[in-house]
Length: 451
Ligand SMILES: *Cc1c(COP(=O)(O)O)cnc(C)c1O
Image 1 (cartoon, rainbow, N blue to C red):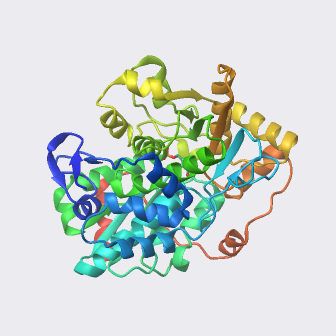
Image 2: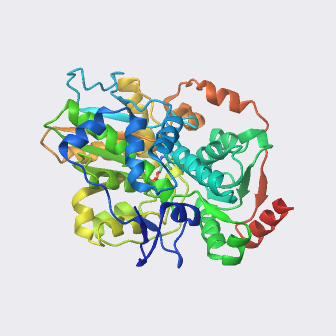
């Protein structure tokens, strides 16, 4: 499959170029030119496979001849060596072989090494990029802005990979203490992964990355590659879990409609869902939960898109005023607002709403959500209020609550156990560098690491 630029569809590239160049010439976002289509029999077969094998089959359509089917199977099996449970509040985990009547699930995407859904994209992208580097002996410096979870996932996935240095830009004071500890201790601070605290917001970090890529001389000198969701290599793997889990649900509840609710910021996760649906995933609608940084929910309500500066909230990974993937969504729907609105429904919530809800669900069911997931679940509940017919509700649980230990414990007034992976990280000594939100400071830092 080839990729085209969303700004000019006469510009196109193979997967390798799209992945390594991050942005198309002229600054466009790469989009898949065609999407695979499957018969009902093929869909049933893919849904019946292990997740990693289903992912490898899908990846074959999105990559190029640098990857054999065997390469993709080993990349996906190595990347996806953890569970993807669809869980009910009572602890039941979906098994299509058991005919358990349930209508609501949490899709827990946080069982990877950094405990957030970003692992799905980062682990595929990291392995795909290293595979190309190994074949070509190219080198890259990865520049990634993070609102908290991306940096950890990308750092973890590129740690000790030959030919790659990673620079993680995070907003100073804008990530949770656990996230900061995770970011600043990857490889114990002695590896190819560097954590950079930027005096500013996540939008400032994201802008710095965009400015660095727009600066041709800088990006060529340092062979920069983006690992943010402007890179299509981040977005594609996020379609895999929508595709596979919706087929599992379909096998269990074949006559019911299926709706996914996604707590959203940069809209990469939603873009993955929309791509999966275009490939035949049996998903009826998408619900989008925003915090008060809600340019997409506003767009759904008013047909007007107004990017704005972000403000800090409890669900910090969604503090985004100018979502990277908004143009991709428009491009998927040929700029047809009505088509987007028919498929997507959104609502936004304050921190007070989120806290109250997180506390209530914990009190009623014992289930603990991270603040982002709570926003998604609130949105699902609001959506369901207006619907009479029975449907299967799936809320995407984007991070483990322990990543937001301080906030979550304060909200539910109980201590929550730290998963062992995090306990180990909390004892390490952090290492970081500081810069202002200024391209000249970033340039100086990159130059200093060159020598
Ligand atoms: C990144 C992130 C989100 C937002 O996902 P987008 O793809 O940017 O919309 C939501 N929740 C958590 C925990 C995240 O890390």
